[in-house]
Image 1: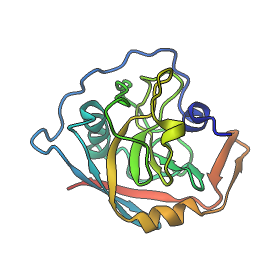
Image 2: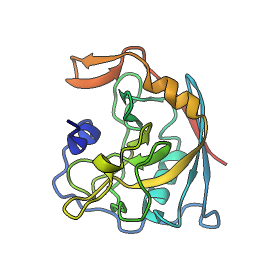
Image 3: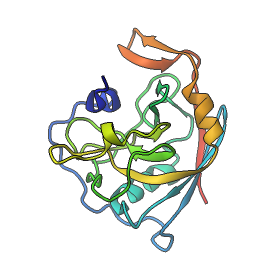
Length: 197
């Protein structure tokens, strides 16, 4: 049984109905569909972001990317046939600094289908900061909004490197005792550099 709020947010700091940004300052405003290149230790993934459907989350993500905040981080949670999550920790498990949380835009018509990118968050729907995940399966039933629950904001599509994400999703994982985290790759999968094209 999937518990999406716990699974996708367990590694985020505890936030109690935090103040959040409704409209982060536009980043590269003349480009409605920025392309982002993720250079990982297992290959390259490319994503096209959708500012038309998720402007707050795209601007939020681009600020981190252009600041180099994702460079030399790790994919700290990998669940086969579910998600590959990263953005928050370096290889020494030091948390990267975060900005104010961003508004949840999960009702934007984009679905947590395979080969999309979305923002991780805590149980507070407006608590997404720097962590993101790739859907490696069709997760709309677990992660899309419903009449009673907020969903997880999808803000782009994988346009290249699906085979890289498939390979990452297959790596052996285990329990990280020091931090009490599940689904941690046994051998670190690194996010070496993120560039916006």
